[in-house]
Length: 295
Image 1 (cartoon, rainbow, N blue to C red):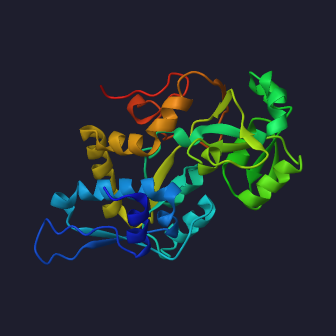
Image 2 (cartoon, rainbow, N blue to C red):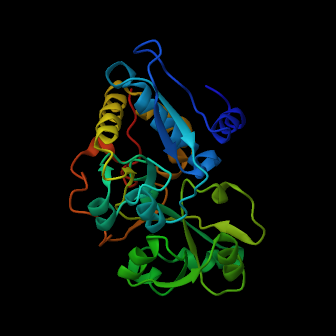
């Protein structure tokens, strides 16, 4: 496996890897992904896409993953680009009913629900104020920060948590520093949680948890590619390579954060589609029970 720097160079050059195992001279399927595939935080999604496509070369043929000069900062933009066929074939987005109505969706949670596990970035001097919070009612006395356009805002508001909107991460950090809100909920996958930021700390004992999923979404007309990716991901789950990749990217901090040491505050998600496969425990992480690993 290439290191991150080499992998990113390959991606930004526009090519991941080409397989021609099914026939000499066969034309590869071109799969275009957003430019964020070059970012360290999103490399996991491209590697998983590669894993699913690689596992279906024998049945579906060779492929090439290329990065498009298009970014998808919020799900609404991703929905428009995919729906209208503008430059990308696959994007990884947090689901909601409208996305699933408009696009092809593969209902396999790529982060096993980890995107719904949120730690709180707070001002250093605020830790004592959070120490007594052990349930949602107490957290509702606090104000949260939120990036405009991110689906998390609607979830926080649905749980009666007051929200202050910011344009981007830097503006949110500035607002937090100026006491415009009390905490910034961040995915436990966020690089900011392991990066020292002057004046801020990760709150010590709380974990917010709401059911959600990041799926691969595709244009409505890409039914064949959707079928291929579904088959590839299902195969990767069966042979353990999905879990191996997931743990390689996320296992270390998951073991530390999801071991029962934090008080879990559950939030309801009114935008969770009814078809979400919550009944299949093999697809999800339960932060109250910790991670289930293969022996």
